Image 1 (cartoon, helix red, strand yellow):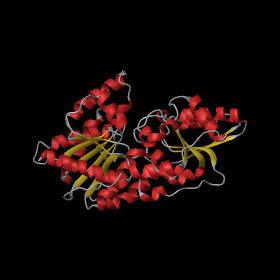
Image 2 (spheres, rainbow, N blue to C red):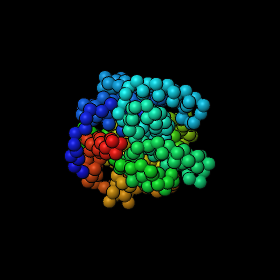
Image 3 (cartoon, rainbow, N blue to C red):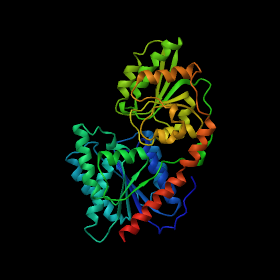
Length: 386
């Protein structure tokens, strides 16, 4: 995909609002900010103050000099609650003082905050455009569950206060419209993107484990499936199997406890969050056992770096794999996952040539194209509001 040609935008004041500064959303925002600042725009961040650890704090430290509109962190609960009212009021006062042109929200909670505040600002003379990207979020809920029905009702309500929806995959777009309903505002498809240095191949350490997991420690990401598959692989191959797990999350302690019961033929090591390219050195084969995804950066990063990868057929992952999607594994199926891992150990699994994958990723998923597409969405939305 070639970089888009577009009429240069006037310098904009942009605030990105999201709840959790971890994982793919935080990565997406950081890349956008880098490109937007390079283009001369003034940018700020609003997010939760209670999420993240030393790894994320180091990233914020690097980001702060680029944030002309500042870094604003408040305690934001994951679920809906009475404290949301005071948070919205505090954020309203802070955003009003920033005189923003663009409120770009990410994830359901950040999306609700930003769109409510943007709408309140419209009562006065300032009319910031309100953009919302779900990043999966509520789309992952079962439409038949009570939680799903509540979230989809709220999404339908909030969509009325949205000037443009941005989706990071066709899967996310289709899921949103099928569960939430037809939109009353325009939408744009903008794939996540990587920077040029991320296409440099990475070699593994000499003592690299057989398998590697990188990501959030929660069941949605299938970490329990990964752990349960390890003793199956050990039994079938008749050898000791090693695995490294990198990340943090709500189910971390439960996974550590489960790992201690996997038997003597399985060796697991847990690591705090670290940059993906640093973690890639720890394992021969990266496993992405997710039950749900939108457009996972870890898959893009691994394929760009020419790492061997086992991933499940969920969300936007088939869009990344394209003509090679038959290499993906059935989701939420420990036997299918273990079978792929066994094939990798026994050299019976057919892997797509890494050069072909890297070329596809480079053509379709670059940070510059992502940023250009987002700026085009801003430009279209500003024109529609004139």
